[in-house]
Image (cartoon, rainbow, N blue to C red; front, side):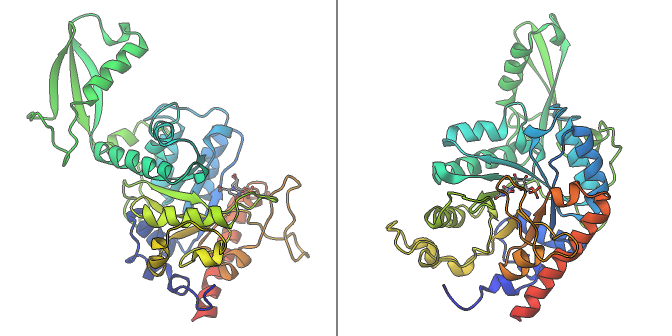
Length: 394
Ligand code: 6AU
């Protein structure tokens, strides 16, 4: 391993804004500077109500809120008024990004659907998600492709109402109505936010069977949509503009759990996949900094017949988010594991010594008697670790 620390380890988050190849990473670095925070809350609570209350309380201290939607009871899947939309409103209010820790892993075609459709429609409300790439690099490019398609569609969304004729929309079986909406989506404007078949006021009628269906194109980020959210959070965090609509992926390159089977060869494949998909991959969930890393560092005996990725190592500016983070109890030096395989490190060890950027903390904050105060304590510790790293490597 090279003894010279990679340039990205020495730079401030502000300095890394410019050289980021992903708009969401640039935004996140700026947000981190504005809030003086490199803390992510892992909001693994039982009920959706608890999740929203926690996000509102802890929001000021964090830059990322991480969810596992599938462990939350009472998750409301409604796209404009459900839990995802409410979280998005809180994210705008407090200035944080939402990271759904879905750990996608499957063939490309399946992950595309899991990411952009289905009950949860993760892409609609989560700025960031992650993938375990044991299925191979193709799933990363498949997800990138799906995100790109979604991004092209998102400035305008279709609202469908039946205005003339019978039967009315409420008489369609749900599935039939969905099919009709899908049909209509095919003629929805894709490029530059303009309709392919030009219309005058954004409304267009088309005949479907005996029914006239009217589409209204409405910006997905319209404040009107936010008003349907009961948190009443049309307010926007004043320190920075709203997050860009681009979506980003973190590759799960290393895990914090005891006995994890992700070896150096796997991590090296993650590094190659990240370098190949810079437009979509923001960085890693990892236990160490991987910027500038080579095959020699990770898996010297592995013959992968590819050296191209190594040549790009110098340009790396990926962001690293690290779970398995906890402060030790008073009077103790090191945090203990959870008895279920989770291994913990302090923010100082992760951010200062191992060179990662964002500390992900779950139970360390959630189970505290005063979660907002504890989140502030973690924010200060993780930020100090980042400052100490810069000082140490200057
Ligand atoms: O702080 P904790 O231990 O309460 O929570 C850690 C959170 C959990 C895990 O599912 C997740 O971080 N996690 C991950 C992620 C983020 O992908 C990877 C890993 O290696 N270890 C880990 O704990 O929500």
